[in-house]
Length: 258
Image 1 (cartoon, one colour):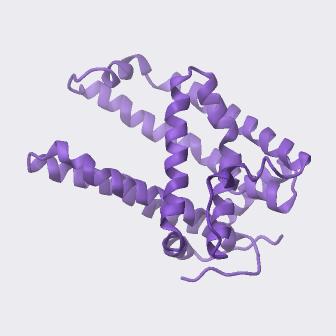
Image 2 (cartoon, helix red, strand yellow):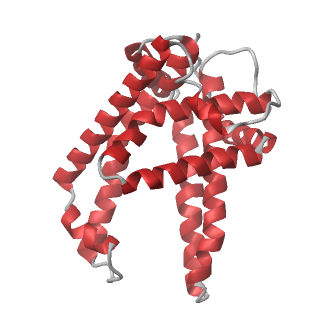
C-alpha cells in the first residue's frame, strides 16, 4: 500500500467523485445512512451504554459503508448486512477493529472531559429542554463548544479517517493503521482543508441560510421539510466522498470518474 500526496484541488475532486458514487446507488446509500442515524438515536435512549456501544462500533460501520461504495462501483446491490462485513472477517481483523473502536471511544470521552473544563454545560443544558430565549452568555458558550470541539476533534479525525479500512483491507495493526491514517491526512492537509471547508459550507452554512430565509418569510415551521432532505443527501454524499479520499491517498488499481 503506497501513500500518495495529492494537489490541494483534489479536495474538490473528492466531492465530485462522491456525487458520482452516490448516483450509482442513491437508495442504497440513503438506506445505510438512515439506518445509522436511526440506530444512533435509539442508542442515546440507553444511558451511557448505548452511546459507548455506538462509539465502539463506529469503525466497523465505517468499513461497512466504504465496502458498500466498492459494491456500488461493481454494480452490486447494497444490503444492510454490509455494515457487519468487518465483524464477519477473520478473528484477527475482528479483534483489531473492535480494539480500534475502544480507542475511538476513549478519545471521544477524553475530548468530552476536556470540553467540560472550558465550557459551562450547566448553562447550556436548560436551553435544550426549554423554549427560553438564548442569552448572550449562553450563545458565547455555544460558540466555545463549536470552536474547541472542532479544534480538539481534528487530531482524532486524522487518526480515524483511514484506520478502519487500513486494518480491514490492508491487514495493518491498530497502531500502524492509526499512524498511517494521521500521516496520510497530514501529507494531504491542503486537500483536506479545501474538502472540509466545502462540506462545512454545505452542511452548516446552507441549512442556516435556508432556515433564516424561511424565518424571514414567516415560514419557520416549514423549513425542516426543506432542510432535512438537503442535510440527509449532503451527509450521504459526504460519506461517499470518504471513499474517494481513500482512493486518492492510497494507491489502488481502479480510479473513480470525476
